[in-house]
Image (tube, rainbow, N blue to C red; front, side, top):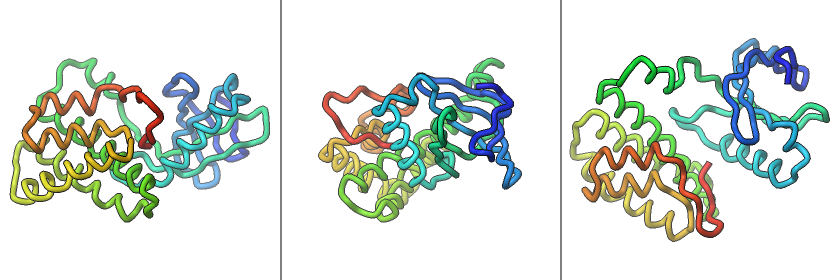
Length: 225
């Protein structure tokens, strides 16, 4: 799609910043609100594939239901008339990518753990939200429990633990991880966090559960956003 394209008469595509298997992410401008946004659009060759379109729509719905500091906010989702593709409008997180940061050389250990901690908090939040939906609860009822993820991630990043971490994390995270498994939800972040606070793995092993690609489900579990 040319960089001068304007989607739905409102979103001006400025620069492509990422591409994946079935979509592209563009830096764009919301011409009505006058702000920079990120636009993820479905590639043209997938627009007519009903299964792919349904998956893209579900991604937008799940992401739009989440509100957490480490997850980009969703502003809009549009399925315009052809030839324009369906697209998702998100908060633009400006700055260098992790690959660009690492190109300058290894990062200090404390900074590495800060990055991993942020990723963990976002993934734990999404998995707890999926658990809430699987149980037919309002997402906001359970999503507050994902604060445990922020708490433990902060403890690991700072290297300091206190009574709140010992009580809240050890008591809550393993219970949430067990509930997710029973609900057949793929939850590597919760599983790794539970193993960490119970002392079954070391911090570097926990970091791998956050940075490794998601596991391929054996059956058809409910996936977190």
